[in-house]
Length: 65
Image 1 (cartoon, rainbow, N blue to C red):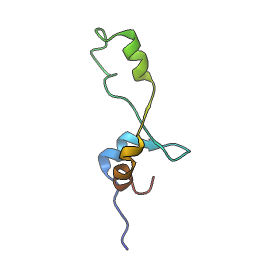
Image 2: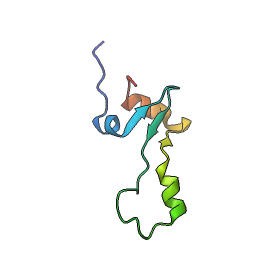
Image 3: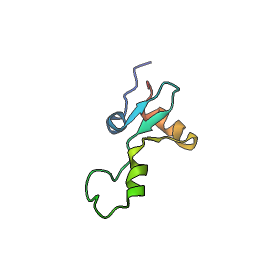
Image 4: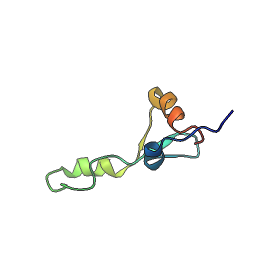
């Protein structure tokens, strides 16, 4: 079988953790921060993780992660 190609966009946005989960940086933290509440900005600091419902799709996009 030939090798599978990873999805270029997903490759740039997701990284695998040690336990096999996929982490990503949350959106909305780059500009227009003055009107966003401090609690909202605090929550955006943490990285997000792909939930189990979408892991099957993500494994197709990132076959070797």
